[in-house]
Length: 161
Image (cartoon, rainbow, N blue to C red):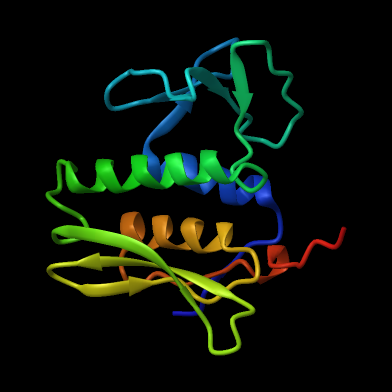
């Protein structure tokens, strides 16, 4: 099966919402887990997002759902996804999560994210200049199936200055 090609980051975020079972509280655009009804937080602030890419305005006790611009938020979201995957109603989706780590390519210009699993061994993303994409790719693999292929190359750019 050919990879799903993404050309708009709002589509990536929308699919992440679906995979992780996230929703937005009516009227507030605050993220919550649809399975537990709990509000998501990052650094004691509520996470505010948009499913359709429309602009969001954050208050003092809120942070924007922009994991591609906030590494800490990306790591938190990834950890949340790993935790949720190991406690899924369908059983442990990643077969005994052991660890996750970053790995460099040969000339150390790109990185990938690797999750080590007891059942599947190493589950790795592609190599990216922008390692945030590796975390996103692995969340898709974990929730949609280990063999899931996505093309996030449109977003893999080197930011200058």
